[in-house]
Image (tube, rainbow, N blue to C red; front, top):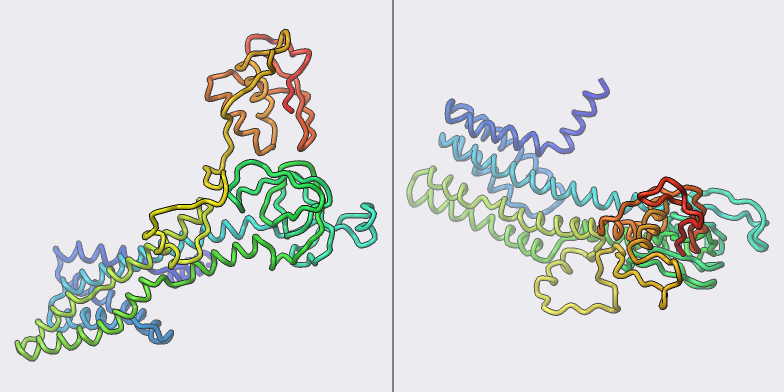
Length: 408
C-alpha cells in the first residue's frame, strides 16, 4: 500500500514522463485506429488546461492558452491528428524541461550534501588552555569565538582563524589543486578540506554566514533566477497571444471556415520554442555546477557568449582540479647506491597506494602510467602533513627491503 501511495505521489508531482509516453503511443497507434488520435488530443487538452490554470494562479504570462484553443479547436473541427501532434509536442517540451530541472536540483543537492552537518567544539573550560573535552554539536550551533577541531580529511565547517599550522585543500573554493599551508592566525574558509594534521580554529562567523553557505545560496539563486532572454520570451508571449487570436479570428471571418482559424492556432503554438530558452539556461548552470564552476545566474551565462577575452587573477586558477607529477628530480650528485628515477617513483607510488594525502593519487597515477610494478607496503607509519614510511617488496624479490620505503 505504501509503495502504491508513493508511486501515485511521484506521478502527481512529475507526470511528464507518463504524459510523453502516452501521447507518443497514441500518435503512433492512431494510424491504425483514428479514435486514438482523438484520445491523444483529449489527453493533451487536459494537461494544457492544468498548466494554464496553474500559470493564471501564479499570474504569469503564458502561451498555453493558444495550445488549449488549438487542441480544443482540432477536436471541434474533427482534425484529431493535428491535436494529437500538438499534445505530443507539449509533452516533449515539458519532459525536456523537467529533466533539465531535475538535473539542476541533483547538482545542487550534491553541493549542499558536501557541507558539514556537525562540528567538534571544545568545551568552554578547555578552550583557553587547550585542555578539556570535545563535544560534537550541530554546525548551526557554532558561534563566533568557539574553538573547533578539524580532523584529517574533514571539511572546515565555518570560517575562522587557524590556531596552529594547517594544510588545506581549497580546490572546491579557488580551483587551486595543490594544498595550501596556513600558519597560526591565518584566515581559514569553510568548504576547504583538511589535507594535513588535525588543527584547531577559532570560529569567525556562524555557519549560515560562512563562505561555503554563501556559495550554496548563490547556486540556489542562480538556479531560480530567470535569464534576460527568457524574460524577453515571456514578454513576447504576452503580446503574441492576442495577435494570434486576432489572426485566427480574421482567418475565420474571411474564409467562413473554422478550420482556417484552427490552422492558425496550430501553426502559432510555440511552446517547444519558448521552452528551449529556459532549458538551455538550466542545463548550462547545472553542468557548470557539476564541474565546480559557480555562475551567478542566467544573465551572466548569456553574457559569456559575447566574451572574447578571458582574464585570470592568478597563475593556477584555471586547472583540471587534479595535481599531476611533472618530473622526478634526484639529488645532484646522486648518493652511492641511491635508486634511479623509475625505482624511486616505484617506491613512492607503492607507498602512496595506502595514503589518504591529496597528492598521493598523483604519485600513484604517475607510477602506473610508466608501467611500473607497484607492490603494497606494510608497517606503514604516516605523520599527517610531514612524511610517511613503510616497507615493501621489490617486484622481483620476496624479501622486504631493509631500509624501507620513504616519502617526505
